[in-house]
Image (cartoon, rainbow, N blue to C red; front, side, top):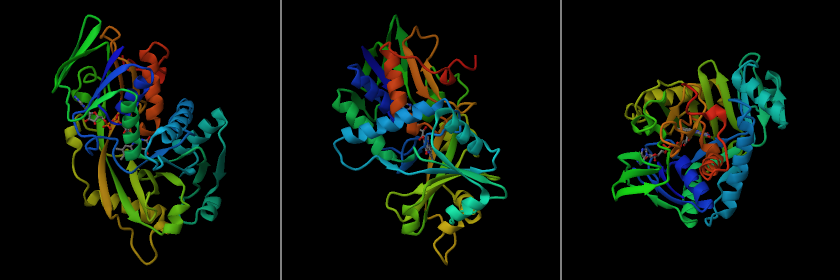
Length: 375
Ligand SMILES: Cc1cc2nc3c(=O)[nH]c(=O)nc-3n(C[C@H](O)[C@H](O)[C@H](O)COP(=O)(O)OP(=O)(O)OC[C@H]3O[C@@H](n4cnc5c(N)ncnc54)[C@H](O)[C@@H]3O)c2cc1C
């Protein structure tokens, strides 16, 4: 079987790897360079967590992803690690989705978690300030993925197993002819048996996905210096505050933390409307979170200062669940893994396996990800 993959962010590369592992002849195309920063997959880190507050159905997929990332870490030739395992603390009001959802997922799948009252949070994590009557939950099958290395490792392994990855190669059109697909690349027309669309935030301009209710949201991460000793022991943290969701984690160099707001920005129809550089408002938003909720991470005698920022994009479905499966109307030739809704990185290897298995006729897609769920 021959397969064309459009888009080589973390998801497209994982699909290429899954297919190459099954001996499929795969040709991947990306309009940009291998390390560009215009999409969703770039940067130093992403959180991986397992007690999944978004829906308990993600738990087996998250566990599988953790296992697969560890396998990829062993398999790759470069020795730098992909995963920094560390606990993940969520906190907010007890009825908040993040707190109640983590408990529901942990209970449903027998995951070990520790629970904390507001007083216990203050005693156990003296760097944070919890709101009135908040509670917290700490999970342990979690950590920090080194995003740039992970993406590179997926691509390198796929190539080692025979995949052809083309960068600077925009697909400007594709279609179906009989039971075959064609795509127009800068190198000319290519043909295959199947096509997989993984265009990230460029979904609205991709044939097959343009009619689906996907939106793009600009998100900004910022870095703040902190005490090295504190950062080295810091869990990943995720707060549900009155101003929205905020999360953070230590940077690989150890003396700073990365912070970001999750969701909360305007939803746009087109990726081009989300390309603004980080600005003073973004820095203020993160600094306010620091002062209000994690004051103990500000180096003593200083103010909360965001020293560096980077913008990135989420591709959102209305229910925030992924879009993975066969697209109807293309005679069984066209599949997608898109709309990762701001939480897809951790799952990339499991999504790659899921798509590859289905293409070779040995797997099914979960209904929660169905591209036809809005019909
Ligand atoms: C700030 C931020 C923080 C995040 N934090 C987390 C986290 O902690 N944990 C987590 O699990 N997830 C997280 N995510 C989400 C996760 O990073 C994304 O879900 C994931 O990276 C999406 O990858 P993708 O491959 O779908 O998209 P992208 O990485 O954007 O890749 C799409 C690719 O398709 C290419 N393309 C598009 N159209 C064409 C075409 N016509 N021809 C050729 N190529 C094309 C583009 O050039 C691009 O390279 C975060 C995202 C952001 C922005």
